[in-house]
Amino acid sequence: MKRILIIFKKELIDTLRDRRTIMMMIVMPLIMIYSITSIMISMSASQERKAEAKTLQVGLITNGNAQGFRSKLLERKDMTIDEKIQPDQIIDIIQKNKMDFVIVFEKDFDRITNEKKSGAVEIYYKGSRESDITKRRIDKALIDFEEELLSIRLKELNLEHTFLEPLNINENNLATEKERFGEVLGGFLPYIFVIFSFIGAMYPAIDLAAGEKERSTLETLLTSPASRMQIVLGKFLVVTLAGIISALTSILAIYLSMKQSKDIPSKAMETLLRVVDPQSIALLLSLLIPLCIFFSAVMLSFSIYAKSFKEAQSIMTPLNIIVIIPVAIGLFPGIKLSVTTALIPVLNVSLASREIISGTIKTGLLLETYLSLILLAAASLFFCSWWFKRESVIFRGK
Image (tube, rainbow, N blue to C red):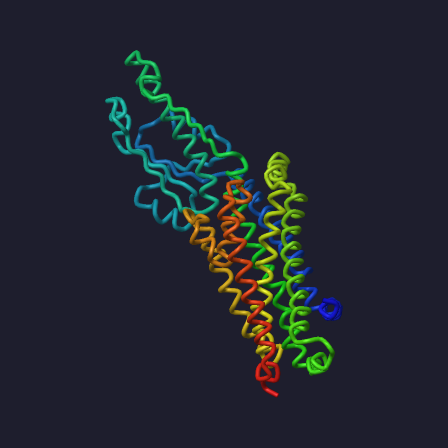
């Protein structure tokens, strides 16, 4: 144990001296995640405000109908109404972004609605994130107009508004605030810390094996009294620690960006802090450790096999995609933690994280996830140590 700790301290010092490793392990997750999260929150809020404040260019073709609706639309200061548009110009005007919306009432709209039938109204627009926001104003104006027509009909028939609502439906959503919040955050959070635990461990793994081969310092280490298993474990602990630190840094960056953002309501931030309790954080971290062990053992094995830093980098870079796929699958609706999915590496962490944040994690499935991760991590570490004992691997390319 003493020799493993000596190797660990030696490799840790070497790692901390490497600026490139520090950049990938701490600086990049902190700056990148903080910046991306802050920019996304700020841009989303800015776009929302811009869309809500925008003066809409609206084309209106009433065909002499719906004068009540027309009058109210003309009174609005947040819309510029153009009534000179011809029906054959509508598509061209919308496609060329000359108008945001064009509203067309059918020719006999008044007669049809007076006969207590449904009059047709068509809305033309080009769908986008911005138009989804601005369309709320158009929808609201049409709904208000519809309510007016409906009130007139009911008054003429001497009926109450409840005549149209024979069912008084009261919905009772029994999902807790924690469960609803977990569905959103629980899908996003593991995506971040899984990716950065992999990236954070990758560069130390490359440097501590392939890098030492390239610098011809591995042979010196092999002549020490430490066994090859002890050398592997010392290096492995450093790589695992790097992955854990990188993942924690990325989570810290998300928290700081949300905490300092002025675009997130204080009430929403209070809800976040209330939902993500210490117990949930502790369970998430307990999942992170065996996952980092698995990543570290796999990457150290590839690094030991590689002849140079560059070759190890080219081998491991595509693994990012392989890691992303199961995390992305975990974001799909309907994919739940089950007896089967709890056995699939990375995917089980993604799904278990969502269940933990939601507060709906089942003890049996959580234990199965732990067991599968621990067994996989142990198998990976065993393979790594066996791989390191082979002379043909260590001195490959010499």
